[in-house]
Image (cartoon, rainbow, N blue to C red; front, side, top):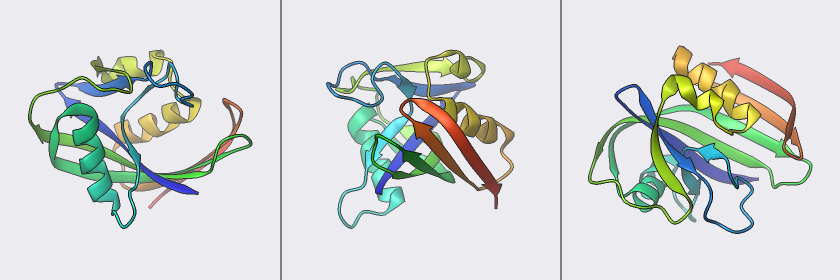
Length: 152
């Protein structure tokens, strides 16, 4: 299992979304996701989300919150523990990303984009804002076949 972070930066009723169209052999190819990535050795989730956000957006997070931990299981991809964050404070200027195109998207329009089916489930929880949660998402290929959720 790999450890990753994913962050959705919020501003004016919008999320900063990354349309993954630039990397070769990208399991997220053509999908819209937040920003984030894999932990470096010895890195904490908070350190990872701050570093990855800076690398992908040029923005330095100043106010962010861990919202949940998502476990991804797949028949073809490596398993993953993803630490899911939202952020409402940041400094700096948005830069180009070498993994795709960054765009501010209205929160109520995100589910209309090509996103993973499981992402729709955790967006529902992010919008409800009921507290910290865990979720397990099981995929066969790109198809979500089962899921489980627990509010903590």
